[in-house]
Length: 544
Image: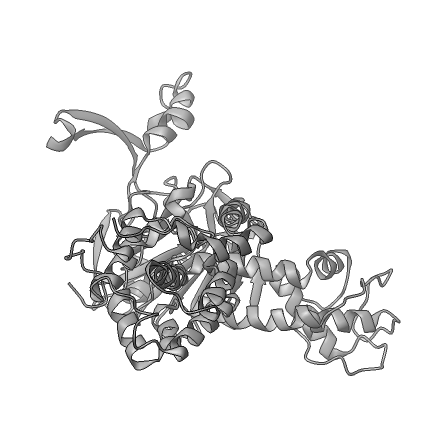
């Protein structure tokens, strides 16, 4: 097994050891989030490495390590995490009080370890397990790092802060959002905004006494650097800043402050934007760390696709897409490997679509199936499904086929894929959640060129030929291409511009509720918290 991944426990946990007794219970009375079962295996391995002896309050206690631990937990907001979720105030009290003795050493020591391991795990994997809150997600969890070995190494070297570099998500989107988040936090602390009410449309070059309020708001939103201006002219620097806001909100970027732009400027406070970015960072923690090489990303609420040749590609392929219709046909979050293309594909019609949408049309029209190039084909069940056969409807390739001239396949349990479409007019709509769940692409030829770019025998002409051939052609990729279907209502594009999109599936609200449940576990009465930290040591397990 690779050293970065966790090995299964090899040493039985001793119930007659004070530390072992806490580990077996998976509950810690000194912590607000007393139940640490989600990270219990990781914590167990930490103490297996130390033979169930203290690692913080040992004979070689390091004050630097203890200070570094407090700093790490205190700085959790830098990564859109809440220090209260890691009991930072209690940990500070445990470290700053009298040195523990007897069984209290075990309780104090495990409390510190649980808080740090919990923070590192949630920094890497996310606070919310999406599968546990009903998210339509098809992304395998990241491999769990060997926390025990890494922690021991950094405690010995007294380099605890370096652990963050190992556990922090490597996705470029996460790093960009983090930078913007911390800049907005500084602005939020500085800003006391007056509402911007010009009373009429404001055009470039106009003069208006409310321009000072506009500039202050643009500074707070991070698109203008300075407040230093006594002029009441709607000047070029402000116009360019307003255009950025218009782009973020998917409005016409003309710099004219009409009703829609005015609403966008006044609608969201800096704090609300921060909250939206924090949700995006939580989702970004669910994504595997990217490897260098080509990759395709679909941001569902943006209705857009990007295809990158590398993580630093400054000119990715970008196109409009159509995604699953809200609320019943949502395109899922997923991360899979594209394995092959099919030119002039058949459409194997899902049973639900056939029964609900196609079969009723045959009731008074016996020739309907033939008129739509739909045929019934007998399929043989696999042995795992009991053998036998069944009829399945499929639509032959051609102009009536909703998959168009090419589909891009990355096998997945949700049975979704990227594909062409004969219906082009829908790409002109601003809101494009119209499909049954698959993603229709506006520029299929360009996407095929991207995917087959380094594959011998394929160029623009051969792709065009395959997309107009009379027969289906299956093309296996020599190198699979990662595909990410992502849901980011706050998203940094390839030009490093932050954009905001509507929460078309209500997933921001769903994630907020899941995170709030976590907050509720960490925020009981403050007086009770202090009493807990001071008095609960006596409740810790002791030797029998």
